[in-house]
Image 1: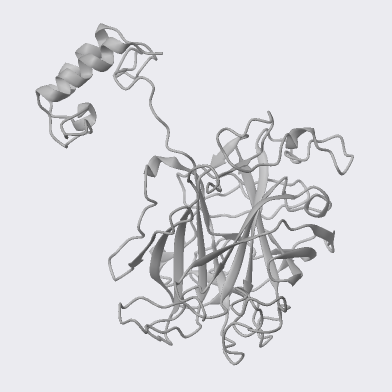
Image 2 (image 1 turned 90 degrees about the vertical axis):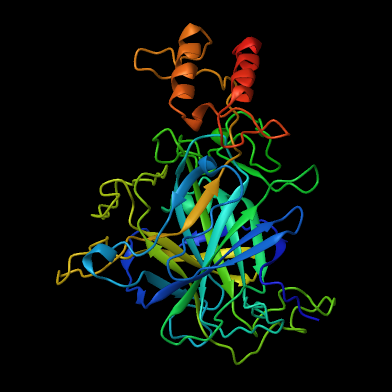
Length: 446
């Protein structure tokens, strides 16, 4: 019996890459269409908890469960030109068995960027577009998931997108394979549904899939998986550490996505045999397209992207002058691993939202991803002041007491330290907050 849980997980083995065909980006035309955000899923790999939030008109995407301040990298693509009258995002169809996208089956799309060394990731956001018809057999108004619609997201160290780096030094850290992805329900021929999912990787020993990017000290930093001391690798013998091939002091990393269309792959081995050609998931006639959204990273977030001297095309949008406007495509003979042959590096041409311009509405070549890190714990919560500008100074003194009294008197919930039976803040200020502040202050600032 097929799994019908609209986002099931199967871990994939590491992926190795092979030769890069071309170092010069080739311009591609994206697919335009009206995209609607159909739903957001929170999925916990340790507990199996799954919460699906349908996105209605006026709703916003559900945040990741936990501290929203833990977001450490984002390329939050969307309709970058809404303020100039455009009504949709751009997307690119992948792995279409009909051949209408002129891509081979099992296409793999790569993107890359820069991040701080020793970054621990405990939650990732993935997203997909799918105009495959879905069902709702249990009547809960949520799509059941399309048999055979699957995708593998892989996260890489040492990826900078250029030949020879992509084929010689990019090393996979971890890959996640999801099957029974939800698709189009109810059927709406006027739009293509976009689904997003926050995948919580944290858990106890044996269940945690948290991973570290850009390790340079052999310390896992509490993560479960990493590539140790990538800063010592120089597999391409260019005297440049593989983890920072562009030499900007940040760890180069990347991510890739590979879709499997219904009727083409035995994704979940539902018949428990060893033959990947039997028990194939889904309807072979279901040949609608799955794909990903392209656009520029959202301004104001902690995103970086690498700059290669050989590429001069950059976005003239929110990240002007700070991004490579390219991505790579490859193919793999296996749905969840095996050698990848890189077909080349491609370019959408730069973001331009000017109506009537010669380039038209053309997004940058970034597809959406978000990384979340562990929530940080303030070791000195009573440190409220001390510096000349009024900011905390890393120590406790009378200035912190004065700042507390001022904030407390103003009703500022920044000093809501207690109130609930478990000692957590209760959204109100009273004597319990004064007592909690004095207790914390008395413990000293490490």
